[in-house]
Image (cartoon, rainbow, N blue to C red):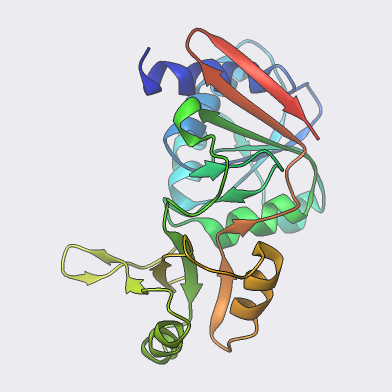
Length: 225
């Protein structure tokens, strides 16, 4: 069974949570794409929601499908956000940011009542860190942050697009680090990283997730916190 199909299975299961009148956070990435398409289909059939996008890319897609987009400031609080993940463990902890939208995704998750993560079965791991952890950095500080992360033995690599520095929607840089051999507990690592001036956010989502829906073959398997 292909990962693509599993992504779709998980996305369609998550969309069942969306009801008319809700304010909905729309995630970013390949799995979220199927969820946005499915919501767009329902909007055509009369579903009435207002949505907040976690990236410029998601906003464009949602508008194209006729989904009403508002700002997070207008929404104040969201009923539900559906988003993907690069890795998810048994404790509902995630690595996100492979698609570069981690900062907006974390802000949206923080301001949401029910956070649902959708993924194909390959994203389910017993331990986070095979996927490199993305960190969003202020360009002014990026090179110095990289030097500091090297002393922490985290093998930092600045993300590129072609031969240029990759830029996020907030015009920041992304540095990908290797946390696989890190001795620190995830919470401690998160605090250490966030204490370095110029690191705006990390792709560790340690306590935002309420429901994980994994596509496994033809069926969606849900776990609630």
